[in-house]
Length: 94
Image (cartoon, rainbow, N blue to C red; front, side, top):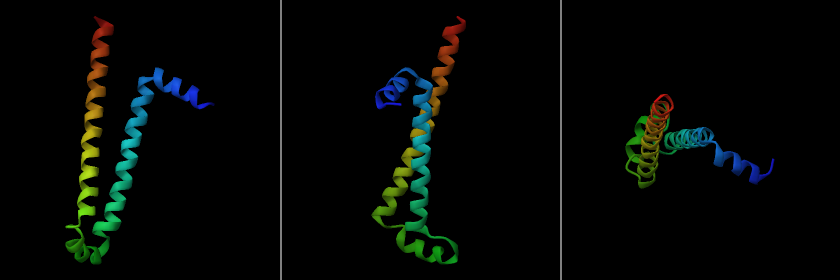
């Protein structure tokens, strides 16, 4: 399948576009959470002590901020999808 065919499929299918956006956001959020845990918090009893030092790091704050904003965007995307579905259903049955 060529790149042009993929672009045409995405252009014509809004549900597929939404699914790809939702999957991309969820995947990036998952990766950021694991990077945050490994770099900023750590695991186990030793992580309790190292997190006191690392949590003030600008890098850790940025990762935390980024994953928080992604989760807000994810919720907004689902809300827009729900409103769009309700609007489509009302238009279909009116």
